[in-house]
Image (cartoon, rainbow, N blue to C red; front, side):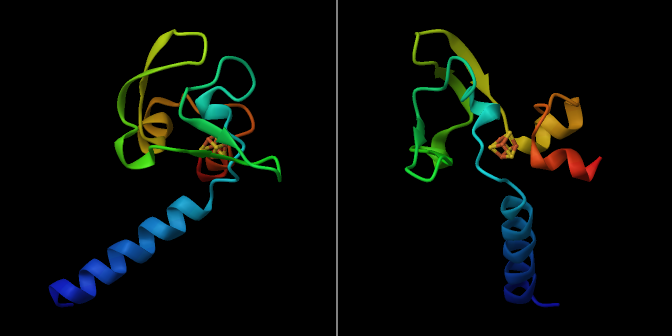
Length: 90
Ligand code: SF4
C-alpha cells in the first residue's frame, strides 16, 4: 500500500471509529456540569464547538477545570460513561 493509499485507509478507520459515538455528550458533562464548548442541537444530540483544539485544560459552565482526553484514553483507562457507545468495544 503506498502512502496515499495508507492515508486513505487510516482516514476511513478514524471515521469508522468516530461514527460509533452517538453524540450523547455524557463524556463532556451533559448530565451535570458540562464543558463550556459543549453545544446541544435541536435533535437532542451534542457537539464540541472547538473539537480540533479540545484536548487538554478546559472549563465547565460553572467554572471548574478539567482535562479533556481522547475517547481512546477513556477506553484505555476504563473511564467510559455508563451509556457510552464505545463500551461495546470492551
Ligand atoms: S459518552 Fe460516548 S457516545 Fe456519548 S458523546 Fe461521549 S464518546 Fe460519544
